[in-house]
Length: 300
Image (tube, rainbow, N blue to C red):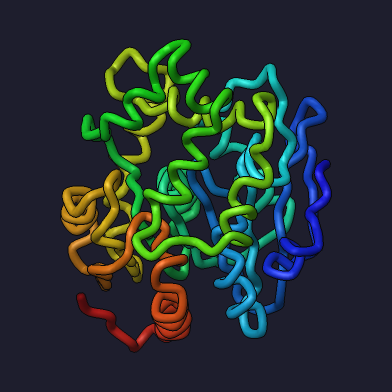
């Protein structure tokens, strides 16, 4: 495992935990604080680093669990691994079962929405609330050209694994306000070689755009069961400057969860927790406190 340099430990000051999920492959996660649990699911090309400020803010009153998907962050990066949506869902489930969590809140971003929603649908009676940020858990053929380019054979390998264009591009294009040098380094840190960028490439090729794709059925099952969660207390935080998950995706979420509490940030991009750190974290904290009170209703 790579060791975080001190400059990153200062902004990501968490103890590392690992769980072997099979075949000697270990998932890394952080487990900070006590109280009601909030489990955090990240997307591509981030890792639990995306949730560092939320964890530090909430761990005084909540148990904060941030999971690194296989191949991401400080998790192992096996080269002979499928890296399918179903694999990420199964790994996250193993972590949650290992921790013997009872009831919990889920926070989800990007691909983490599909992973988190799949698990929420398996345990609807254990869900306190759901927090959705710029992502999807349903089918769409909408894919920006720059990401479609990264799906191409050979070209995608060169861009994502060779030139690290996906991570470097995200450091600029996923935020409307920019990242300082230390935070940008934090996002790049786990993905410093062709070998260590395998999951980033696999995530892109795993985007199911047709019925023949290996993950099409998995995502279909997630989408078809979203109605099971429609009565849950749901917060949607959305950066309106997202070039990938545009407002079209937000409107789709509203169709599934018409009773969700929706907060949009006109000056935020895909990394909404970076662009609107203080405002978003305060909103999440207040929402989670209210979600525990059965007599409190939340309206959009």
